[in-house]
Structure formats: structure tokens, C-alpha cells
Image (spheres, rainbow over the protein chains, first blue to last red):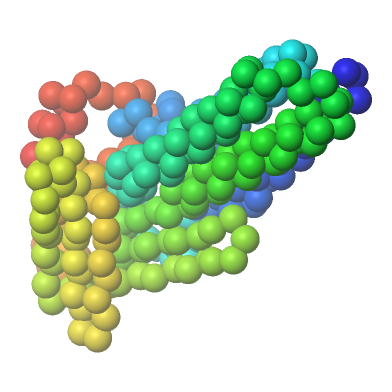
Length: 72
Length: 202
């Protein structure tokens, strides 16, 4: 059971981390503010998007770990 | 605020991403794929107890691959949405469009060169959610800004900046200086909707 969990974790880390790094590279100097304090309007910031990536990765791992726990 | 392709004397005024409705289709597709994958899994594993461990694990791995592909596609579309930015300065309108791997496109139009600025909303959905297309027509170029959110406010703002840019250009920096529209950025936190409206209509 440990091996599939480690493999799943690695794949999720690779997918989520890779996408995030590619996005970070593309988002340099593209007007996505680092935080909301500089804006009049509440906008999507890099911190929010990073939070989304973390939550998405955690959800993926939880869903797959639960499924694998019962069916592996 | 800094952005790629900015000239040293350009003053930042506003920026926006396309309307969030662009993410609706990728999200719907993701949900549909998840339902399909979990439905197939439930139909395979719940009625039949697959005794052979290799077959069971092979089916599980196959479904997991589809699950990952669906999520990777959604993530790519999600990030691409935030890599498309329209930036308006006191001189130009920039459209920066990127993807994670291939595209890095930067198009800009000089505000003082604009011959016509048009806005269009073509459906109930567009009217309901307040987005649409702004078309900027310059001498030989036409820049279409699709899925522009808060289209009326953005249009008014563009007209204001265009007027300012043409006055500035015709005066050539001599004589009385035109009143400059205030940039939509400050250091004091967020404004309430009523304040934003008052600010944008001033």
C-alpha cells in the first residue's frame, strides 16, 4: 500500500509543482500582483493562485489515497 | 506596477484578465470527466468483486491516468486564463497573451492613434454578466479585446484615457496641461463598490 501512495504523491507533486513553476515563469512581469494590499479592487493574486495549487494538490492526493486504500 | 513591454515613461492605469466565464467550460469538462471516471470505477468495482489483483490494479491505474489527464488539462486552461492580461497605460493598450509552453504574444496600440473604439455585447449571457468585446481600431491595426469584464466601466475609462492621450499629443506638452485621469491603483487597500463606482464615474 505504501508504494502506490508514494507514487501517487510523487506524480501529484510533479504535476502540480511543474504546472505552477511553468506558470510562475510565464507570469513574471505580467501584472499579477503579489498581494492585495496594492489594489483598490480585490483581484486574484499570486498568493491566492499558490494557495489554490496547494489545495488542489491536497484534494487530488486525498481522493486518490482514499480510493486506493479501498481498492488496491 | 511593472509589466513586460512597458516603456520608461508610461504610467500604469488599469489591467484586467478576461471574464471568469471563460473558465466555466473547462470546469464543466473537468466535472464531467470526474463523474465519468468515478462512475466507471463504481460500475466496475461495486457490482463485481475482481479477485485477480493484477486486473483490479490495472483498471485502477488506467482510471487514475485518465483522472490525472483531466486535471492536467484543467490546470493548463486555468493558468492560461491568468496569463492573458490587458494593460492600459496613459499611452498604450497592451494585450499580453501567453500559454504555459508555446505562445508569448504581446500586441499594443497607441491610445493617441486610435481612430475608433467600439464595444459590443451580443447575447443575454453577455448582458447578464456584464462582459463583451471592445474593438480598438487604429490606422492599420485592429485589436479585439474579447471577454472584457465590466465592459461599460472599462469602455468609459478607455475613452477617458484616449481623450487625455490625444489632448496631450495635440498640445505637444506646451500650454495648459490637461487634467490627468487618476490611476486605478493605490496603497490604501480595497474600496467598496459604491466608492469604486463614484471613482470610475468621476
